[in-house]
Image 1 (cartoon, one colour):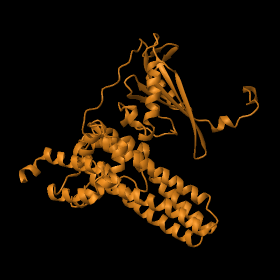
Image 2 (tube, one colour; image 1 turned 120 degrees about the vertical axis):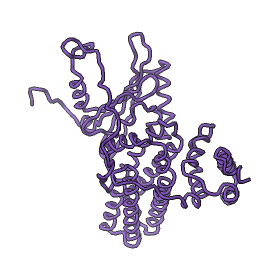
Image 3 (cartoon, helix red, strand yellow; image 1 turned 180 degrees about the horizontal axis):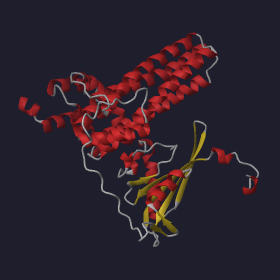
Image 4 (spheres, helix red, strand yellow; image 1 turned 60 degrees about the vertical axis):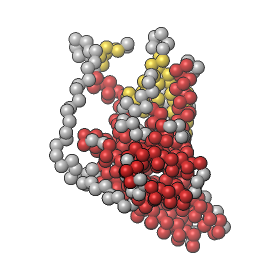
Length: 408
């Protein structure tokens, strides 16, 4: 039996069977007992690999998400016996961990502020709670760095399932803090109703965020440290400032040595004798093209015919964050799991020629965001890819009458 348990592949089979039994309705205690008898301690990356195998085998990511909390409950005892990942200040994992510690304090402060509101819902106390919630929402940068920088590197290792599950939980957290924001913005006059609504939104939110700390620290970061190379961590670190940090600043003790790796080869382009790139309607240098795209009042992203992100413009104030780490990433993996099927439908329609554009608009923090997708086709009408154009049109919607150039 010992040889059987110690065999890595057999252990993975056992774990996969246990998780499948949970899916089929076995209780946590039933599975936990068998797990304790047969497996003993399990490594973080092994658990994540099992989730990936289940997804590869056809189990929907939504099912893995539903079981995620159960997985943690089953495996918490063995995972907590593992050494926590150690990192030098400046290493991305060190920064992620520091943000978790800071966020836990913010959660404590928010919980205390809400307790005061429940006992005395004065305008001053409500405003304090709103300020604490606003502070909590700064943790968005932590999730964005995971989604747009760390997850793409894991996906390049063929490791996408667990990250997709985490992204879905991020979206649940985002929905919960929006719900709490609504309660604080429009509190019911009845004290009991207010207390009930605050508890009903904050307590699940608090649990989701703290459970995510545990999942990150015992599963995601150990697995990432195992799979990513030194040079890949350098790339993660290089892209972090584009998104920013929550509550902390990255240290400067890592990397302890000069960056490793060969400088990328210069991009070759069909330039004419004067060094200009010949376009259909003019001549520009590569530098001028970059500058023009960066100064347009719109964000542009281009996805090729294979659904891979090939380019995005880096404007001064991007509406939706992008990181160079997404270049080459499947566009389906750049969207929250809840919206992937809609993105896929648009791409399928473009590819089949059923339509050439699709547009949407949303209101977000005082901005009116217009998002349009356009099919890109060559001269023969063959599909080449999709360009996404995003713009804040709040100012445009407010225009009235006329303003001519001569009126300037």
